[in-house]
Image (cartoon, rainbow, N blue to C red; front, top):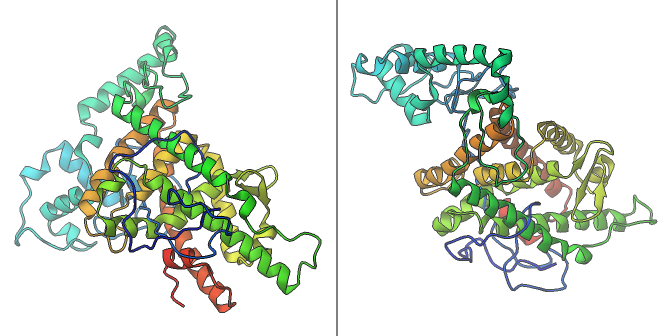
Length: 442
């Protein structure tokens, strides 16, 4: 496999316009033109950058139970305990209701601030200054267009009643039930698609999805060529011998390097990424590489065998992860997350969009132009929302559930940091590329 040779201080190579590829698997990081027979990570380092998606919520009111949360998420408006994504923002019930009332009843014109209009918002001040609370709602990302008016609600109720009548079943089944089998499917069609009615992908969104899926396929195929160069998994030898343990650790770290290379390679092809400055490219990749690796790990999970397959045919159980030197405290959450992702049943387009959203996370450390990053992220959020509502028009919680997985990835990223620290205590030295990306300072 080609070993990375560029540093994180080196600008990410590539053209400003992404070149779509033809693949749909996990992303890989590799500098073009670098082909050596050295095992992965044997020398040098490379930059990795990825962004985690800001907690982008769904646009319309959710029906039914809220998506499962970790239990300690905070409202992005007032800091109180969040109950879920409301009007595009992770927020509490109080701020959700306040924002809806303000939009429906035109509260913005009646609110006034006794101060300078810059009150700091918390669970106490939210009751004292409605104008600043509304301002903070909008700054956090709440969208007025996500709120249905009383008239819209009334019309939707009537429409739903009509859809349930036998005479109205034909429009519902004509096209809304049609599955989205490929990124080219653009219409939600029909009146039976609930909140997905009338939704269709724009030509730009279709092209974006096709580019992302193709880029993933291309990057994945490139990584396959590195498989023969990975240190073999020890077979037959004493599994507890020092040499066997070191060989298993080297095997896993080399797989990690292939994955990092794939991610960087993919990021360079994501429309908009190369428009960012070098510092922001590096900051985004360093922060979210591990999260994308975990997404790709979940993608390769086999629930029947409870194993994860990397590259073409490298398959590993929980015990294999443990024998490679990873802690149970990190292994178990990986498999739990993988099972949860499998239940969502994402296709290649949804995985590609979710990864792109993750890459453009404006709240990553050391990002210099967060507003620009956020603007680049928004088209991917909108495309994923439309795509999921076209594909599963009756499952209005699918989109927020996907975004909640990005919140879960933040937690897993913290657990990973603890795992890296534990490896250092065991005198297990990471290759230069992984040390640089994960900020491991010897």
